[in-house]
Length: 331
Image (cartoon, rainbow, N blue to C red; front, side, top):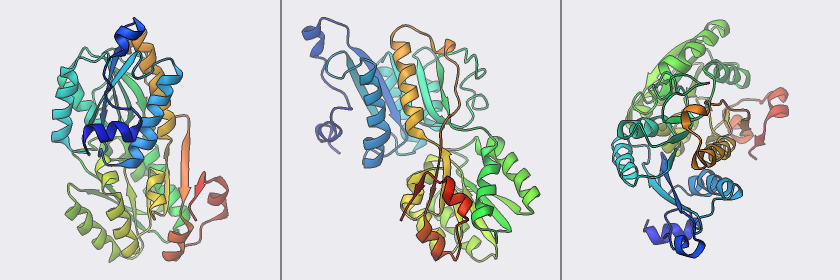
């Protein structure tokens, strides 16, 4: 997408000329954004990014007046994340907002001084971004995606909606979700033992490996799948959901975007809420506070989405208990 077209389509959430400096007589602050999404992902632009810029505006930071935002997209690519991180750091912004683990790691490689605020990071301590949640200690802070117990919660929900599941694969890309084994897998395996389900770790690094794993699962009776929060999985969500449906494998995901395109069930932190809260941290840093003094926070809102049509196609009946607590039911 051309830069001018992107600015027009987003309503200004990219880099605006800093003409307001002379007009307003005040310093224009610079905020970098490193996104794990594809720049052609309309959902990412219209939701997460728009929520971030709106929240900043509510806090007094308006593009074209006292704020400039520079955005770099990475489409889940590690190589692209490193290149775009280097570009952003070279611009010397006042603070950088980032939306995933791999992208945060890329920024950390480039700077230990520019403040960084993250969202959607599953294990900030284990990933080496912060020394501890209450006291991050360095130039990085933000909003973690979930507690490690969510690995077990996903499996419990999958078993509830698909009681015939007797074996379950735990799918993730070890390059973009290195936290998966140490952070979510232990609780997943603990729940599997209590539910008498055979657990299997299913690391994948390409669409071909996703396809191979799912076709294999479809040939096994009682198979199910847990798709770990992972930008590689999310960027392949349409193909992933289609493969699972064709293979008659029930699956649970972390984001409602999966359920909206035919996924059976999703449960995870509300990213829009995390993004709005992250904007408040960006505001505090722009006003002089240090990332080291801003504790890493956990989610306070979780969302569940159900797709009854997919449940019917899989021969499943959604329990009334799940329907009663679902935040979104896709008809």
